Length: 208
Image (cartoon, rainbow, N blue to C red; front, top):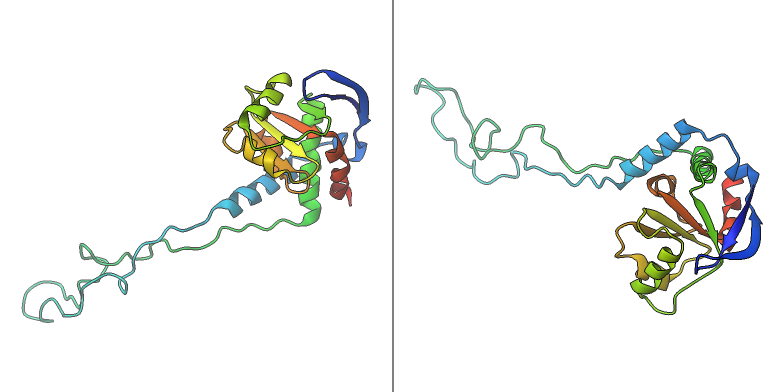
């Protein structure tokens, strides 16, 4: 599969790049994508919800009333869950939501997501670029030249670029990830995938 390489001004650079067929031309596996995205979303869930049990609420040091003779139910502590202000019974406590997935399926899911973008003409390959300083205006100008400023965009760089990351950090529709760090969810959540030319070589890890 061969695609044109664009300049950051949106014009054709005259170069073409061959996309690896083992990644961009495979039959996408929807189940692998589902499993990987489910794992990613679950692992992002911090699970910090917490209520107080009867041992953590205040009070309850003294028996409210005598055991017998009042004509009411027995009660040993105001910390009981049946009392107003008492501890919760079987309430939520912090725990993780981790769902594991093996590397082979994760790589298949990433290849499948990339194949979907390539087959739907939602992939743009651009020449290597960077910004001299963290300026959102510079990145917005590049995205406008590529006609993707109004869409949800994932920019995959060949390496970590702090200035570029900081330039796009406050753009709600733009996400910037190095090729070694993007996920299946990042790709599927974006309308357009913009990849730097040299980032294509970094995808070899997905076929190992």
